[in-house]
Image (cartoon, rainbow, N blue to C red; front, side, top):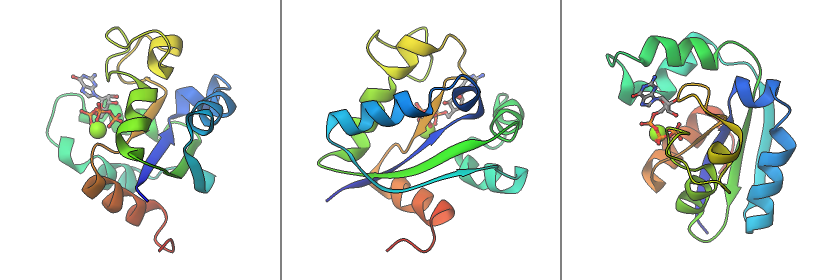
Length: 135
Ligand SMILES: Nc1nc2c(ncn2[C@@H]2O[C@H](COP(=O)(O)OP(=O)(O)OP(=O)(O)O)[C@@H](O)[C@H]2O)c(=O)[nH]1
Ligand SMILES: [Mg+2]
């Protein structure tokens, strides 16, 4: 069964959207494998978003995700990676369809409520960073 990694970013936690996000993933049929409220250090955020290092938005992205608590989770189900990303909506909330989390709850690209792994390989890498004891 496929697994993916999802994070509710600090803006989503501050807006009280944790339950709403989890409700949507679970309603879709994705099962929670693990879940934790945490704060990211700059070091962990830089590793997690390593593919974006050097891009103009990278410092602001790291600053945002370290600005407050986040909720980290591993979800499991058929096509979990694609399913979670569809539920999240397009990266830029202005392009995200209504009915998606970003389309319903965000306007800004940095503070876009959620993160979801972009492939099975990325999911394995990200789960390894945040839930190293999960096998
Ligand atoms: N300001 C700004 N932020 C960006 C831009 N592209 C990406 N980001 C931010 O960086 C995060 C990661 O970017 P990507 O990995 O390309 O986006 P994604 O895979 O569609 O979505 P994620 O699930 O967040 O990883 C996004 O969620 C945005 O918050 C950009 O062009 N400008
Ligand atoms: Mg991404």
